[in-house]
Structure formats: C-alpha cells, structure tokens
Length: 202
Image (cartoon, rainbow, N blue to C red; front, side):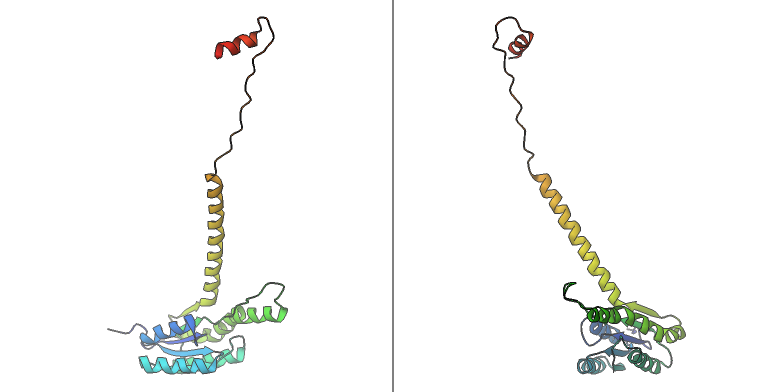
C-alpha cells in the first residue's frame, strides 16, 4: 500500500504531547518527514526519537518558543533543509490557556497568551510561506484557532441547551386556574330581571 505522504515535509508545533504528537505520529505513519517544535526539549526529543524508530521516517526535534521569531526561524529552516527548500505542511498546535478569572489575570499573562496563541501563527506562517509556495500544493492548519472555535461552539451549545431546558420546564408546569366568582342571586323581593335569569339558568 502506497504511503500518502511519502516525500512530503511538515512542521508541527507543540508536538511534545497531545494533539500535535498524535498528528506527528499519523503523518509519520504515512511516510512524511517531520520537524517537531516545542518548548519542552526533553519530551520533544523523546517523541522525535520514538516516531523515527517506529515508522522509519526522518524526524527531527527543534526546541522552540513559538512566540520567538528567532526560534520559529530555526524550526522552519530545519524543515526547509530537510525538504530541499520545500515545506509541504505547517501545523500550528502549540498553545497555552489562562485558567484564571479576569481579576486574577495580569497584563503579562494576557500578553503571553496572545503571543503564544495568536502572534505565533503569524510568525510561523510568515517564515514558512516561501517554502510552502515553493512546494506548490501545500497546506497550513492552525489547530489552535480551531480549538478556540470548538470551545466557543460547545459553550454556545451548552447555553442554548440550558435555555431550552428552562423553557421546557416552565412550559410543563401546570397553569394555575383563577377561580371564577360565583353568581349571587338577589335576595330582594319582587320581579327583578337578574333574579329571574339566575333562576332560569339554574
């Protein structure tokens, strides 16, 4: 069976763990040459060695802070050298989360999150663009933005579901009936038209 990515070269950020590591493993199983980038040098190097040993494909690790233009350029240059000037795929998965309230989040933490989750995409795409264009048919996958969209979708879906459940619960409650006032016949003597109608309808 032919390997679908044989002869292709890809850069994957955040590849020391999680989705990026799984993506790297899948690409390698299809014959893709890889440059893995991550801040965690020890784990990243171990992942690269494991993938190369299991799938027999070229796999290099580059220690990289994706918010640093210098580090990003090193990773892209390594992939360009591996692919003889061409890069066929750039997969951006590296990202960080803010697990804190607004009051607990200082400006430095906020800016760090923007640098890693947003500015890094500009840096990697900008550095890799000439090599992606040289490859002709190439691809960029920004997994961090996709994850953000998925989380927003889940949040909106959850809010909508809770709202629908609240409306359904309110609709299922029985509507209280307001008792009607009972008609009282006139006790006055004589031929009152009201007393006649009340007696006739009884």
